[in-house]
View 1 (tube, rainbow, N blue to C red):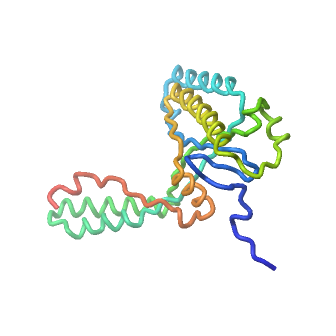
View 2 (tube, one colour):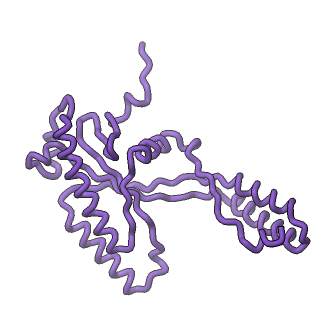
View 3 (spheres, rainbow, N blue to C red):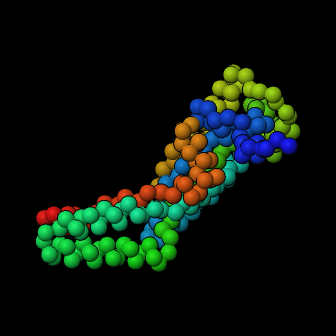
Length: 215
């Protein structure tokens, strides 16, 4: 009995030119979205953001998928940097402050895992839509296509990018930035989903300047 590889269970046929091509030859693009602190906005600002979001959703004639990716942040190397800085301090006051800062950061880790959240929008496009089919019809009637010609791929890609630009413009009205993932970024995105432990983020915040002075 032959062994199946992970790729056999994925719906992805290939990733090229910043576009995901599925096995049924449908296309997908992914936008990475910035975040904002909604709670810190005034009531008027919150209402404006909600209104803009409603307008954006009502203006769509295609489906989108929202993905929130959480990654555990590996802060060990950052702690090592602080410890090294502590050992090099010659000023006793700075040494005490560095030790206190080290204990503070270490306490944050011991209190629970530090997670980083990233937000994405997945935008679809199919070859049938370029021929006039819309919405769920394009999914239900999606035929088995052996391969996309280069002309078909470029035409669908162009339409897909128009959708992504439309969404990016709508999100900008809500003070959100949207960036399309490139081919290497798409590969890393799917790799991290299937390898969560290896995909832990190394956390390197800026060390407080007052701890560095005089070292």
